[in-house]
Image (cartoon, rainbow, N blue to C red; front, side):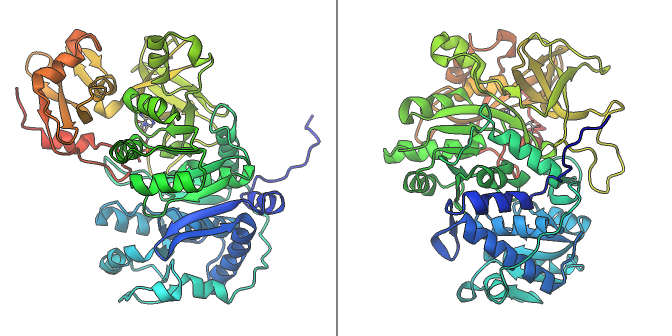
Length: 539
Ligand code: ADP
């Protein structure tokens, strides 16, 4: 017997209708190249989305067509998300930090037809032009007064296009499995792979994101979306905010600028934000140097890489901001788990609390997890056994765009490429990325644990651990350290600091001081580049 309930498709356009009706006055505040601070509300935003949908139709963009965006987090990028997906086109968000060959590859591979670009990426597009022959034209996200000079052909000004359009547009009733956004993984090995989200996965993911033990988002919040809209939909925040009526604050190109973030957070009364550890490190550095603090922020979600305990503690002790670890990936839209404590942290001994909060947390409803050994046998949830982390759920990628290899195993599970432990009550902890694992004398050493311990040293700004070949142990860990500006720190001091914090046989034989660590296009330390840099290294 089938149930007798309505079969309403889960469509992104329903977010617009809901927010416009119920939270029309909630604001979207952005920094753009042509506005020091642009401010409007959901009612105005979604009226402009309808104008944009009309403009896209006039350009000849049809259902199923892919448009590319090269843009920072701001109101125009927000409008592009909604107008393209909801009219049945697909929004390919392009990470402008990718190498030129990767940009060329993904624009051609996704079959982008039009590119919508911030003015600052115009020189990049001019260089790419000969290798992206299928692009029909370019729309520059600007008003007429700030349009750049360009040799690009078929160029339009975004605001001029919108100005002549009606704000009446009937959003089509699409199949909920219609593609909404394409985001490519950063392709640390081989070409980037295209992950194609759909309306259904996006809505379900947004529901999970706003739940109390995840973002716990409501109309009383002001959410600063500091993770880029060009990578994994800014973790779904542009959808979650209007669903709840939360104010949305978008920092434009200033997402790693501590001063701008502090100004925005305080002036827009931001209560919550989410981002990768490097962003929060930059913010802390600014707060330390300037002596300022955050007036209204209550919680930060830190994901994308392991968050050092020192970051969590400094936010809490100096700025009264609680930091949650979270885990996810491009292929998971991205949310997989959030660390919200079962117990009241105040009731736990400090050492227990500190250990517990470093874990990536428990799976949100909708994501199933398991850990398996090399023979794909499931491992126990005892907090000790570690193995490959596999997931499944309605917002997990089932296959990559035009890719010949299957993304799932024979039983329909997606291998995340992470190595993890899970405690009996479901707290998952990433010990490593499988390709970064260090195997010494047949045993695994967690580079993440070592890095966390090293970063806890007050004179350490950044730390990374990679495996280097060793004739006796096959591999040994090597610690690379960026010192805090102006600090003296010796090898003996930092290696001595690790004693008692990790197993003694994990402690590296050597620490090398470097000026900076190479970063990936998504703001994480690039271990691949470090391994390359230190491939000739020997003790
Ligand atoms: P890429 O960096 O290739 O674009 P993603 O942005 O999708 O990939 O990053 C996903 C990966 O980031 C995860 O598979 C995991 O290795 C790492 N990651 C994400 N969150 C955490 C976390 N809380 N702790 C440790 N690693 C994390």
